[in-house]
Image 1 (cartoon, rainbow, N blue to C red):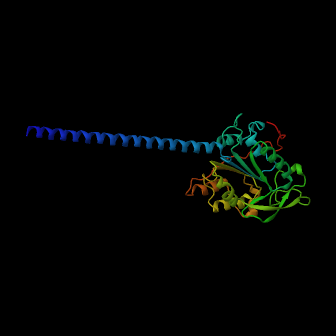
Image 2 (image 1 turned 180 degrees about the vertical axis):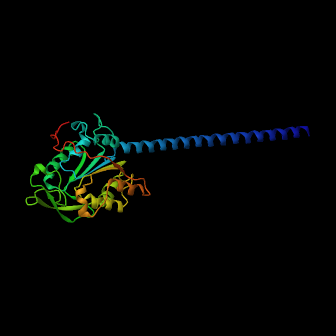
Length: 291
C-alpha cells in the first residue's frame, strides 16, 4: 500500500512538472512571436516613414508658384535666380514658402506656371522656359488671358510702343494712345479649372500665387471664391494687385479689405493675402545660361 501511494505521488508531481514545462514553452514561443511581429511592424512603420520622407524630398512639384500676368518673366526668375535680384520684396516670401536657395538646393522641387496675355512677351518667356528646363527645373509659360472661362477668344489691348508696354489686358482704359494701340486675339484660360485639374492633382505642400492681370482680377477673384478655392490647403498665399481704374468697367467695389473679410468668413482656413506689390527689376537682367 505504501509503495502504491508513493507511486501515485510521484506520478502527480511528474504531471504538474510537465504542465509547468508546457506552459513555459507556450509562453516563450508566444512572446517570441509577439516580439517578432512588433519588430516587423516597427520596421514597416519606419520604412513607410522613410518612403514618405523620400517622396517629399524627391517629388518634382512639392511647391507651386502661379505667376498670373508674367510680363517678361521677372518674378519666375526671382524664384530660381534670386541672387540676380538683391532686395526684391518677393524674395523673402520665396524663402519662407519654398526654402532658401543654396549651392545644393536651387528649388528643383518648385514648379512654376506662368500665364501672359501679351503675345509679344512670349519669345522671351519661351527662351527662359527652355533655359530652365535644360537645368532640370519645371517651368512653363503660356499665352493665355486668365479668365473665368476657357477656350474663348478675347481681344487684348496693349501699347504700340513696346518700351511702354508693361501690361496688356482686356480693357483699353490704361492705353494712352487709343488710335495706335495694338490689338491681339488671345485664348482665355479658366483659372479655377486649371487649379482643379492641373495643380491639385500634384498634391503640392504649398502654392504661392501672384496675380497682376490688368483688371481681369475683378472677374477672376469672384470666380475662384465661387469655386471655394481660397483655402490655405489649395492656395497657401497670394499677392494681388488690384487695378482701381478697371473697377467701373466691371461694376466692382472689391478691395483687399473686403476680399480679406470674405475669405475669413469661409469654413476652411483661408488663403493668406500678402501685402506685396513687387515691381522691381521691370527691365529684368540678362539671361545667364550657365549658373
